[in-house]
Image (cartoon, rainbow, N blue to C red; front, side, top):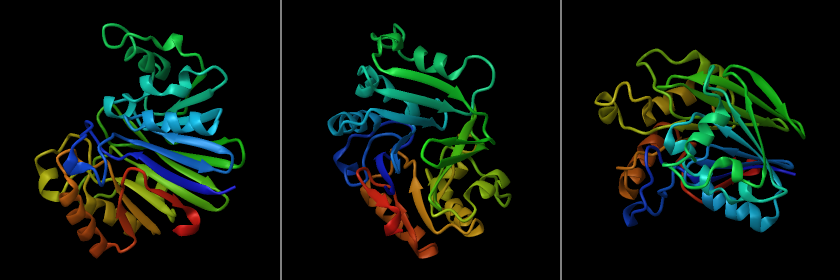
Length: 276
């Protein structure tokens, strides 16, 4: 039944709905992965709102949401995800970066409590379930989908995901900070031989030097990881909101010169595994 990924939000930090950013998009992190009959959503940034409208229109009745972490740019679309308010829709929410209290359900509920938001999570009419799978573990979804995870270097923690289906794989590694000349072994193990690596490429090398400790990486590190991990295709992701379309064109061209099978994520782009 196919394996594909669609980008609904590609930015980091904060939405940037600007004319200068239209070609790449201004919504924050959200992907839709289709693996056979499974609908898998990765992160719940502001791109989740439009994805929700599409799922309702096509009659989708269930999905699994994988959260890399719970900083606002990765969960702020959740209160506007219409399927979660719809009776008969089933949403399984999985997180791996939290340890102890609060748990993932409490965190997702907190952003929907007054005075932050007027509609509490408990009023959602869909069937919601919450599951915590510690980063570093693997698990299976229905239909032959297997997911591997790894801890990432980010303030408050984050989780990378590798989704495998019918001999193909997609690996999502965002909100992670590299250490120069010391590749992260957790990441290398996770991405090894993957068909498509989606990697945090927030900054240029020059920008990153002024932002050490913020928990993000660079397109040059993305290229190094892709080479070391025998990655087939590389996607630059989590674009800085200050990077307009012209800047992203330059970054994409520079990255392609170093790793030809590379592209910068654009909202609305869909990739099928037959095209990779």
